[in-house]
Length: 408
Image (cartoon, rainbow, N blue to C red; front, side, top):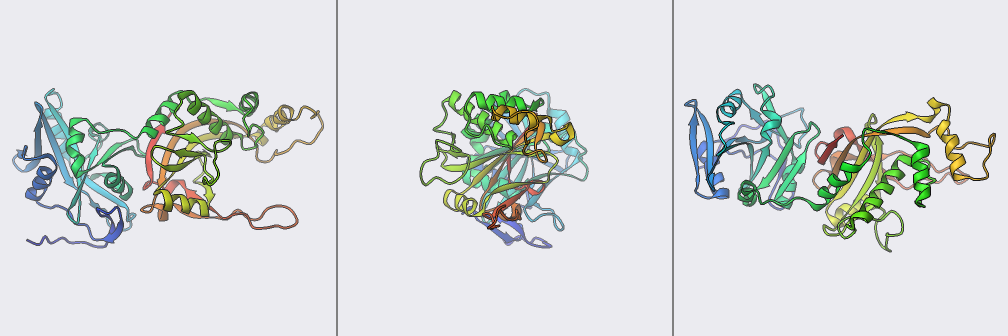
């Protein structure tokens, strides 16, 4: 039987080969089609129950637990929305059902969108507590092409999106493990969670204090003018050494960069790809990336590149009478004396307050949405030679690449 769907336009789809293609949605539209998909993933111990006579809930019973699944299709929202954005529509009866069943210890309730394309299903579990108290009428839960890609690649992919919603995308063959609670977590994400728990968020960090700490520990970029970024790298490297986890995450910005390694801050050895640390003003919509050749090489040879972005509020030193620029000169140059030249007064940051951290993954599916040319002008000096071409990261257009969010 051929299913007929009415489609306005094509959107991004992910196939079983982890390729992104532009095509029409292929949603499972009938109760029977969705039930068969759940049975394919979970076995025959799945059935349909009716709620309020006309509503359908799927039920999976396992190990004495009755898992209620409120399910709907994931489809493109239509123009003018981005082609990578899909939604599951939420309805008022979802909240009614939840309120009737939430107190039963032997029952769970899952809000789950079903993506179907070319015979493959991906299930997106929207953490119920993040959605159930919202206005349900004419509301939606959203996923992105990259979420679907990550499920095909990794089996199970969990993230916190930019609105603090927990979303888990699951390849069909892993759905049973998801309900059994036996899914494993990315070891690098676990390390960053531990690092964040002790990093100095929600605290104003003064330039002189951070520079002095780096100098005391003989950090190779202690004198660097962009001190928030160097301080972040110093702290991450210190964490890696204390944890003894360099086989999982290695800082390669200095002595650890072996010949032939690409020019990024981190190498994730057990997973075999690169990452780069960025400290960025939270008000700025874009952040400079790395040089284009290295960026493209990292994605093509290793399949992905992570940008780990720590965003901060900023006080400029020029608004504080160049206080920290002067203190920096005293710290880095023992021969400096009052009245001598003070460098970097126009761009020096007086203090920063880290508020949020996000990890963005660039891969073949989403890189075209995120990267643009960074016009950085020329080098100073007589030659005025062009600098190495870099990419610019559009932070406000990176929904399709966010894989982890931490808000202080």
